[in-house]
Amino acid sequence: GQNIDQPTEMTATEGAIVQINCTYQTSGFNGLFWYQQHAGEAPTFLSYNVLDGLEEKGRFSSFLSRSKGYSYLLLKELQMKDSASYLCAVRDHSGNTPLVFGKGTRLSVIA
Amino acid sequence: DGGITQSPKYLFRKEGQNVTLSCEQNLNHDAMYWYRQDPGQGLRLIYYSQIVNDFQKGDIAEGYSVSREKKESFPLTVTSAQKNPTAFYLCASSIEVGDYNEQFFGPGTRLTVL
Image (cartoon, rainbow over all chains, first blue to last red; front, side, top):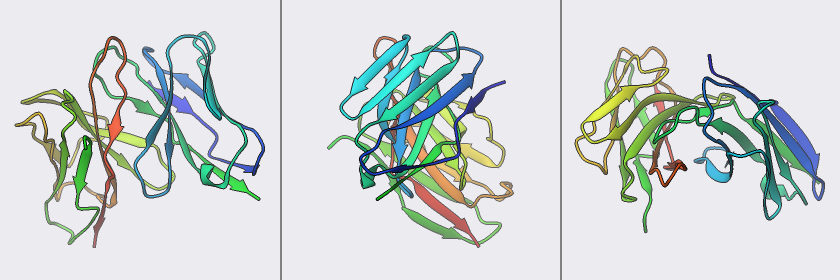
């Protein structure tokens, strides 16, 4: 079956660094996505990993280890506006196919 | 402006009534998707379509129906057979470029069945 695990909730302080982990067990692997979703809004794309290693994009970085079925999203210099849910999603088939989503991690940034 | 539109943003219906949620995209994307999101839950796939006049069931298709008569449009009907229809419904679309296909999401429709 398909299984994507993330912590349910995390809290971090403004200005700090936080790492959100994601482990996956899927029938195939053709890329891992991270999305940000503010309450009541649509998810917005943050990052994509298909090869092992770190992808950096401003304050956000994402890491992938395919052999371990593991990814993390790293958020630096946290701001209050980073309070949101972060969704890990895997594309388990090639082609224009659906993503398999984890349940999301709700991050609260406190002063 | 290219994008995905869903209407309405909020929808209320009485129990036992069918309701159709609209999803339109002008991104020229081939594939379109419907997801359902419940509080504290991730996105669960209802239906998807990779090409006009063709669609496949997702993990939770029971009680829902779709059509794909035009590339731009992928309406979702929530029927009275859906036991617990109150949820946040998200439509998405994607196009494959090489081996990459990012999904873009519409703003969502929050359906409440009274």
